[in-house]
Image (cartoon, rainbow, N blue to C red; front, side, top):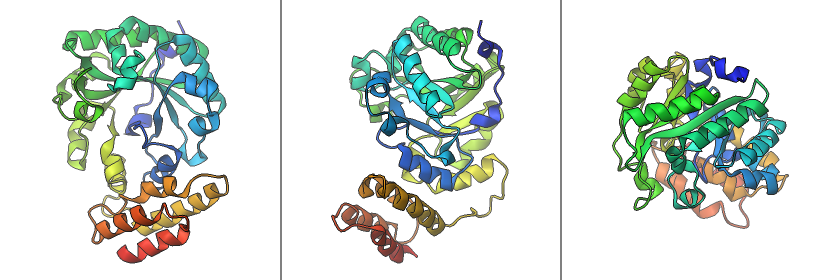
Length: 334
């Protein structure tokens, strides 16, 4: 058996994680988060193996050093393709391969991966085992999953699903604490309608103490942190991170026992650092609006936040848009 199967990971590596989000966690948003919360572990959007093998690798695997250790989330069901794309990611400098077993979208279902993989625990084990054999020992392997899928929803089934992956070499699990309902619900509804069940995640950690267990789902306030971090190894933040990114500085202060009174950086500091990044990326051909869109929620909850959002939304896509567009927006909130 590969040495990874006996490796006990350092849970501190996964204490604070950014959830993979389609059309959200691109390299630009990840860079923004690396400014706000530099200790947060970052994940790509879910990417299919074929997109990496046959597509634009620079687009899918491109990253900045500030994002490291960066994890690639793969959505696939073929062990050979998964390994081939994972090796390309490692060659590009990524440090973790995360297998998606929780996404319930129609596109993912038609490809029989994502949450559909919860119905095929042996295949998940085969994918993990193939990664364990192929990847260098310093590359982490993780699985992001839900508690169950459709009528396969019992702690016994959930436990056996995880046990299969553990036996195959996985030691890190990101658990969205809901079941997935395939068919009839949109991905958004699947994030909201199935009830949260944190107790199963806590129980899983007790049953697999050698594993790193990270809880995901509904973690949108620092008030949730003490209960979770007493029972599991880490938290993974999803939509709240995109809807109120600056709040992640507060999360980081609490999680790592830093000075919790005020973040070191102000929002304006974050904007100025991010604009240095944007200026550099513009010279490489990246679109201004794509990068600036990630700033829209930075002033969430602050005076004149609506004016900031409206100004950037209206003007960042104009042909004349430039860094000065953002400086003009800053004058509305500064």
